[in-house]
Length: 232
Length: 120
Image 1 (spheres, rainbow over the protein chains, first blue to last red):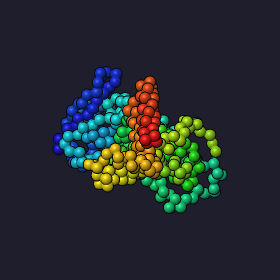
Image 2: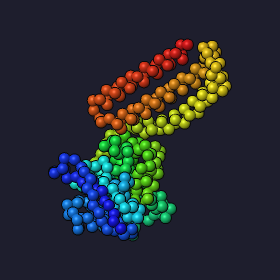
Image 3: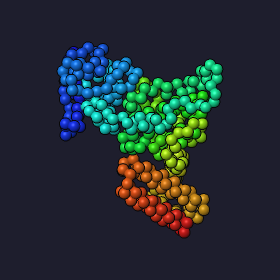
Image 4: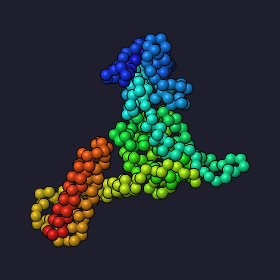
């Protein structure tokens, strides 16, 4: 079927303002939105710029606004979006070009919550064992692929540049609730201020936007409780 | 423990502010709904007059109740307005000016209300 793509385009070096450009592509209903974008780039307009890498929902590079919702282009089928698809870059970040946004701030916030295991105990001979129950405690937040769909759907993050955003808190949650980790105090110190979890107003946009179906708002609430009680 | 770049200075004010909003919200729900029911159904709107208030404020417990209603509602509302300013205004001159105005308004209304309750 013919699918019409309305794509928001912007080249800061040439265009005065962003504008929508239309393309028509022949696609099947089980094709993905990403297939349409590839088709446009390869056969119709080589200047259309977007990120994609693994194309299978794991690398997190093709998050974009599809018909007003943040989704991964590689996980969204044409039959879910219909014959007219409106595509815009993620909101809240500066546009580098077309659908490519500048994620410096996003990854700076990510790094600020110490997103790695901290444990200075001498390593045991084989591995740091953990019970299945203890592992399950943070299972949901291990699924994050850092696509930024949650953070760029969050009204608090739109309004407050210094808010760490849901993705960074999800990453912090993954280690705060890991029994093998020893940096809870440092992490909570980073999350306890006005730029951390307390800027969350539980709008639930993050949970709705997550392409990995992480219960983001719930994870943030658990970090809030940990900050309040001084530990997980 | 390895060393990391220091965490930005945060303090615990925002956490207590968040907690206060939850606790005062629940308490206000009970206190304000009780107040409303008493005024509308217990006493009845048509019976309300100066004498009713004067009699009620004869008891120090009612004065305490009304003072807490004032304190919680005013602080809850003003803190909400402060948070809105943090989110909708960029850091800088205007936000600071409006926050100072808000703080003064808060103190003024609190003192005026308390003054009436205490000296009636």
